[in-house]
Amino acid sequence: MDQTQTSDDAPLLTHSTPQSEQTALLAQQKPLVTIVHASVGSGHKAAANAIAQAFDLIRGTNGIPEDVEIEVLDILDFGRIKFDGNKTAASFTGATRPIYDLTWRYTLTGHLLWGGGTAWSRIMFPAFNEYIRSRRPIAVVATHITAANVAVGARVITGIDYPVICVPTDYEVEGWWPHKDTDLFCVANEFMSETLRPRKVPEAKIRITGIPIRTGFDTDYDREEELAKFNLPTDKTVVLVMAGASLPQPYVRFRAAMDQTLPFLRSFEDMHFVFLPGKDEEYAARLKKLFDAMKLENVTVLDYVDDMAALMHGCDLAILKSGGLTVTECLCAHLPMILLGKSYGQEKANTTMLTGMGASMHVTTARELIVTLRHLHDHPESLKALLINGEVLRRPHAAEDIAIATMELVGKPQKRKRAFCRFYWGEKPAHIR
Image (tube, rainbow, N blue to C red; front, side, top):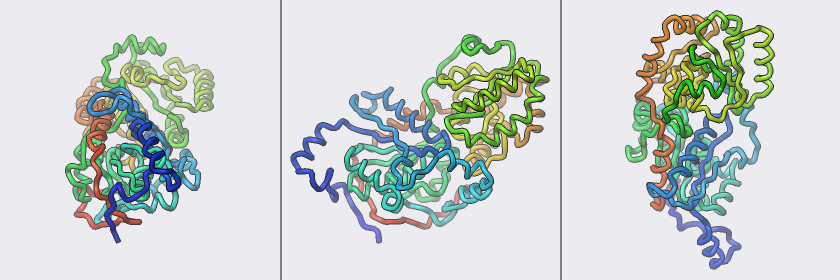
C-alpha cells in the first residue's frame, strides 16, 4: 500500500550523531548536486560529465550557488554485486541483441507502466542510501534508468527530500524510468514528450532540452586551421570513422564491418578517412600496422582526441554507430552522418528518428557503405540536405538548460509515495514500437 512521506520523517544524519553535531555538520556543507550515471556504454557517463561541466561554467548565475559542489558518480560502484559495464554492454552488441531489442522496446511501454519505488535501493544499492544520508545533495540528476530508480528509492528510504531529474540519453524513452517518482524529465525532442504524456507524466514535469553534450560544439571554427592541427588535408572530403570510445565492447560489430571496407578505401581519391579508435590502444596499433602494410595514403589513425568538437567541425562526414551522444555531437557540430550496422534497442530508436527526419543515412552492411560513399564521393552536394534536416534536433546548450531546470526545483519539498514497487495503468501509447 502507498503511504505519503515528507522529508521530516527520517533522521538527518545517523541515529548516533547528537543533534548539535548534526546541525554543525550541515551548516559546514556546501550545496551539493549529485549526477549519477551507469558505466554501460560510454554515453551515460559522457552526458553526466557534460551536465557537471555546465553547472561549473554557469555557477553563480541562474540560481546556481557560487559554491555549489558537483559530484559525478557511477551507480554500479554502489551495488552489492559489482558489474562490469563493458561486459554488460555485450547484451546489445553480442548474440543476445535481438532479445535485448525486444525487451527494450516492449517491456513496460504499453498500458502497464513502471512508476518507481524502493525495490532497487533496498535490494541492490543500500550503499547509495548511506551516501545520501552523509552527503545530503540538494538535487540528483540521473542519466541512466538504474541511477534514476536508485535515487528515487533512496529519497524515500532516507526521508531526505531532493528533486530527481531524469535525462534519457537517446531519442526515445524506455519503460523502466520511474515515471511517477521523477520530478522532471529532460528529453531530446517533442517525439519523446509524446511518449511520456500517455504514461501520465504531467506536462509540468517534461522539459525539451536536447541531449547534453560537452561545450564547444556551438563554437565557430576555421576548417582549414583545425584540420592543420591534426595534419589532415584541406582539399579533400574528410571522413571521420568513429570506431571507439572509452569502452571497446559496443564497437565490436562496427569495427568488423569497417574491416571489410578497407580494401576499397583507396578508390575514393577525393576522400580522406580518419579513424578514431578511442582509448583502445591495441586496436589503434593494429590499424596503423595494417594501413602501413596496405600502403593506404588517404587514411589517418588518431589516438584518443580530447578536443572532439574542433575535429568534428573540421570534418565533412562521419561514419558511426547510432549512439545517442555521438549522433547528438555530430548534429551540433554540423557534421553529416552515415549510421553503420543493424541497430537494436535504444540505438534502433535513434536510427529511426534520424533517418525518418532525413538527418542521417543508414547502411547495414559493408557493401551498402561502399555504395553510399561512392554516391557522396561523386555528389558531395548531397551532404547539405542532411545538415538542413538535422537542424531541428540541434540543441548545443542542452546541458546548461538541464542545470538551470534542476535548480528551479531545489528547495521545494514534495509529498512522496512510499512503495516497494509502483506499477500503474497508462493510456494508449503514442507511438507503435
